[in-house]
Image (cartoon, helix red, strand yellow):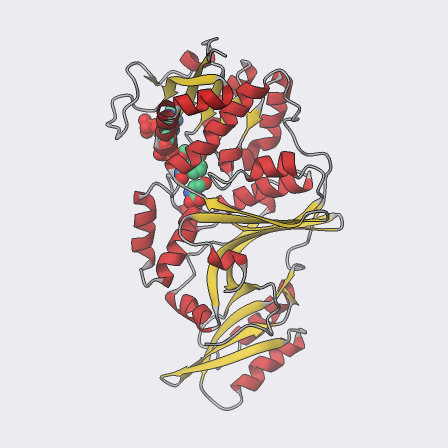
Length: 435
Ligand code: NAP
Ligand code: HSE
């Protein structure tokens, strides 16, 4: 069979865009052997054509004019790898409106404007794919939309940001927060504005997309409660280690009856839990469903080439299914209620710094008990007349724990606001070890 020459275009020629171009060029024969198609980047939109680039594209490929992509009838598919919301959203809508299939690596755009974009794609009768927007090289969207389409997935738990996982594992090895972040930026893992990574906004957007795909109900970024790793200190990392746990930024999406809860935040993960073994810029997603019980997907979650592999796979899927594709653009078929904030239940790790005086432990225990929060484990650490209480609770409603901690924060013996992180463990908190 002779290869079909397929001209394609990119919006963006940065870390991911240049990697897509290289991957297509360097693996042209493999792609041709597997698909019968030879995808060739003929145009790439950038802000500045004159900028020095580590990997220069072929002569004449770079442009600052969207119309040269939108109005070129030979271009069969466009990969949006420029990031940001505007003008990106408008560009994608223009391309879809002009009948161009689009694949996107932009989790913020898909999580915030997915409904309008999928509508535009459906109206134009073209595909909009977004595998690279979640967990880079891990094909989790394909698995949810195709392999598990009838599996009734009711829980998704994962590590979905490479930059923060890289920082946390570097901190475990003794590195400082700032130096680990700088290294993640140098390696091309971080967003153009790394605040999106460390604040949890990047992971929250990915969890919104995963929850939408898993539960068939639109979840946007505004529905996701999130917290980042800015407040995680070396002391937290050390306390976790002493309890045979590790600190991870964990995303959790849960469907309970007809209500859903999606959140992202730092958590203490039991060393024996699969997520504890996820290190560096790797990601992992655990999918739990009626028929499948549990499936875990793990792999590179950030990086130019890693992400480019998912972008190219989406482009190949578009080319391979155009005209006969069975996937609907929009996976949402119902509207589920959100679980009210504070009702979610979890075991928690709490760190409380108090004066080392008689009776203070009893006061703390009283406040926890008063809100129905039961203590599973407790370790006290002394230094300079102060004591840090490292407490692990049994499962409790977040609202009850926060109320108890508000009261504890008001005790005259409490030196600073207590911190609380959820604990992720398959074997319950009673089985956790203390070093
Ligand atoms: P990047 O290195 O900053 O590249 C962005 C590219 O887009 C640059 O070539 C830039 O042009 C171009 N661009 C930005 N704004 C533009 C505008 N208004 N008009 C025209 N061109 C514009 O970003 P990246 O790391 O490749 O990320 C791109 C997308 O992939 C983002 O949505 C990101 O979330 C997603 N993603 C990244 C990774 C990763 O590991 N890096 C992984 C998964 C998904 P100039 O070159 O002229 O500045
Ligand atoms: N900045 C993102 C991360 C890139 O670190 O996970 C992948 O989406």
